[in-house]
Image (tube, rainbow, N blue to C red; front, side, top):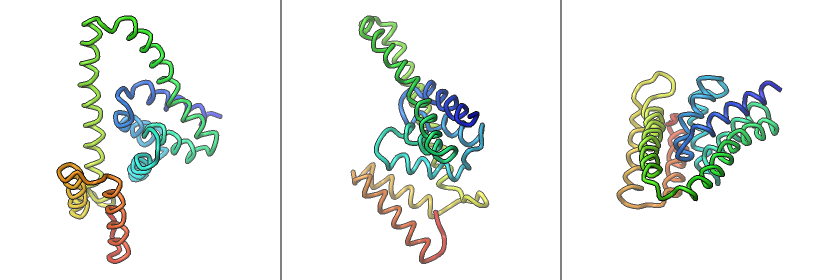
Length: 187
């Protein structure tokens, strides 16, 4: 029972402080699941983010469900998922009421502008953590040249050539699989 409560309370914190959506929640989930509770290793967390992004639905909710299932099965998934969505449900309901009533106030617009800057910082932090995990070797921490080339290639194809992100993910996954089967190395 304490594990279920711990999952619920940890993801209540994630849901409560992940202003800005799923990508802003990634560093908070990482802190809770990897550093505070040790439920996942850093490598497992990277895999979790990849799976959570590829599956339909919000990334934070997918991550909460995944961690819950891994730690306590079905009821763990329920506890973590409820913990993740409960704060949002309450906060959004209150904000809708407040925004509907006071949307024309300049003070409210100033607060929203400040929150936008904080959200960009949280997303940047998550992106930097993921880039560091990609460009360093999981075993000895050395620079992973194949990871860097794969990252830059995917980034350039998506950003500058406007290629389909799903196709790029499949291509990168196929490349890593081929690399592993032929050379025995993995990104």
